[in-house]
Image 1 (cartoon, rainbow, N blue to C red):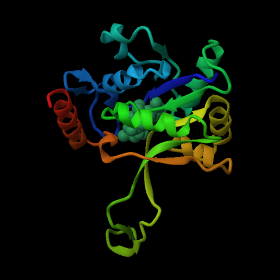
Image 2 (cartoon, rainbow, N blue to C red):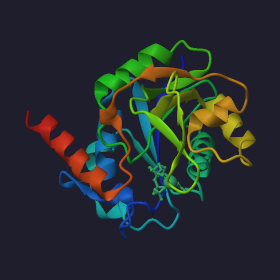
Image 3 (cartoon, protein in one colour):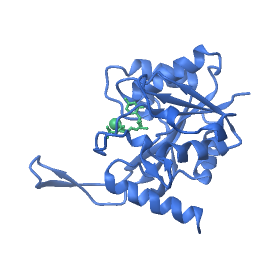
Image 4 (cartoon, helix red, strand yellow):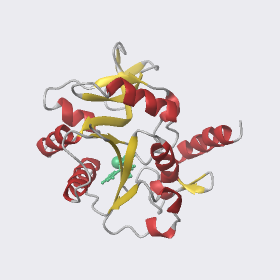
Length: 234
Ligand code: CTP
Ligand code: MG
């Protein structure tokens, strides 16, 4: 039987956030942001273990109390220069520790998506557990899309037919994902699915919603705070 694992790459610096403290540790409802993703993933009955990939020189993680998750948490200090490097290094470290088998599923989730719900997670797992390739949560594009000519003037309007915004978790089997990321070292992949696509495969898009957005800029933090607060105090 294949097992399900979560892997959270958390070795970024949050340059677009513009704060000295890496984004994943910024306070969100009295917790470091990454806490919220860990909680949702580790609460899921299907998920056997949550791997956290930190930068090798991370000095922040150990300043918090993670004991409520100790049953399911494995911390790996092997983050790399890019998100893809961090994911690949984390997969390799987990395998070297004998924790994961080739056909096990890995759900890769950004530390910066704190508003993931357990319903979205359940849906992803149930829609993909018997899929040949795997897939990701995603949302159909809602806004009208403009392509600029490079100086903030519209060159043309792009059709949004069949366009989706990729989210995480992105769920693939260990062996396929590892092979895809190893193959993709020379291409700029900003998510796991694009490495899979580079092998000529077609990940499944599992409809999600805008609540699972990525906290990237300072104003995103206030929005995430409102969403989580409302959930905690309906
Ligand atoms: N990430 C990582 N290793 C890197 C870069 C990013 O593990 N070398 C992680 C981030 O910590 C985050 C996720 O990948 O959980 C998504 O990345 P992003 O939102 O782009 O975060 P940052 O790279 O930290 O932010 P920025 O791009 O603004 O610098
Ligand atoms: Mg980044």
